[in-house]
Image (cartoon, rainbow, N blue to C red; front, side, top):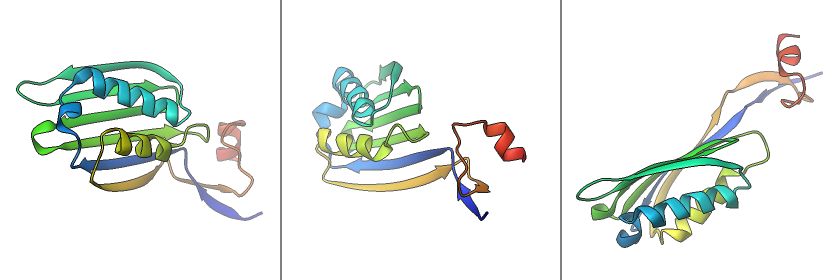
Length: 137
């Protein structure tokens, strides 16, 4: 049986430029969009916390069963920096990214996807079943 690279999670790191500055400075809108993005990704929202900075900006995180979504905004620059990390196959971080890009009305973006928890395993390795047994065997 052949070996292949597997990973436990996917982590999207992105900057959204040219966003609606009023949205970026409104903590209730930012929180709503981030929670909606988690749901759009098919993630299970557990909790969220957000904070407004003076004179500008919002930071916050949505804790999901599959990991987290985080954001920091610079309304004066029309910039939102986002972080979307999902583990397993249930949640799709790209759906969250696309939701946020559209919701904040981003004109341009930079985005990178990182594979997290990379390891080598048999091709038929199933992360959900007996992880410790399979990885040590």
